[in-house]
Image 1 (cartoon, rainbow, N blue to C red):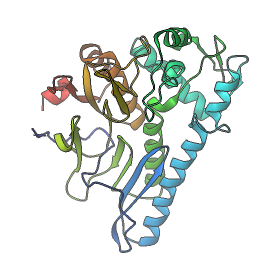
Image 2 (image 1 turned 45 degrees about the vertical axis):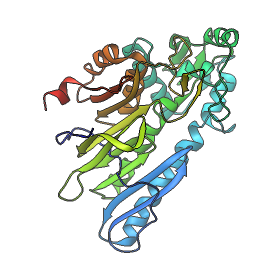
Image 3 (image 1 turned 90 degrees about the vertical axis):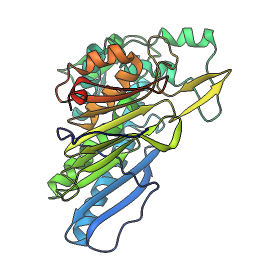
Image 4 (image 1 turned 180 degrees about the vertical axis):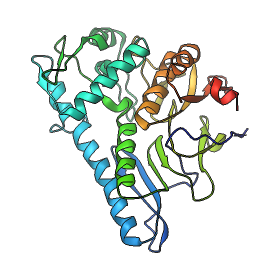
Length: 330
């Protein structure tokens, strides 16, 4: 089944329908390039009158993606995130203004979602290995769950520092770091005078303007058929984020363990298969897509209605499509 939805404007993201990573074009007009950064596929497509302008703009996007990866990767020992996780359980850790703002946003989303969005989930999230098909046993999981709780992340606005209430706590900004990255990348493009562009980092995307006379087309894939489209979103000037149980997962004894973790249980929610959120910026779109997936349809939609300009397409465990009130009205 494919559903065509009407044009949506108040956001900034688009997912190209063409598969694969495309090489940079050598002529004027549309230019595009792909790369693998932050453990995901990065893609940028933009219009420029001159090739040199396009190359400078694309280079700025890739540089921003590398900067975010270097700053917030939990796998790089020298990253700011790794420094926080090493030290914040013992002492207050001063952080950059950018990081403090991200942590404050994370706490705001945690409060709004009543804990469905919680960056301290990392204490249980790190116990899973999706490549090797490893999940924690009940005793290990129960022990790790004592280290989860967003209220244990203590921010000091005066010192611009963060401290954890319990030693052993840790955080992961994967819940909205890619959305933040596409926001930064599109900000660079706008500063360079680019008026038509699409930037994506995995399932998180943002579009500037339209595609010179027609909207950008964002496909919502069928969660169980990689080559099928469940919905098609025509977008201009907006952001979009999709969270699905098919991105990183393994199955054991009929249970699908995927990378979207409920902080309250330490397990993967099973009520939904896919959530796509449209919002004014990428960070908000990604945080809300995680919130809705973890919180479930009813709770998630209630949270969504509290964020102006946000809408969602949800596919539940039975494969049924659900739409937020804003999309239903269209």
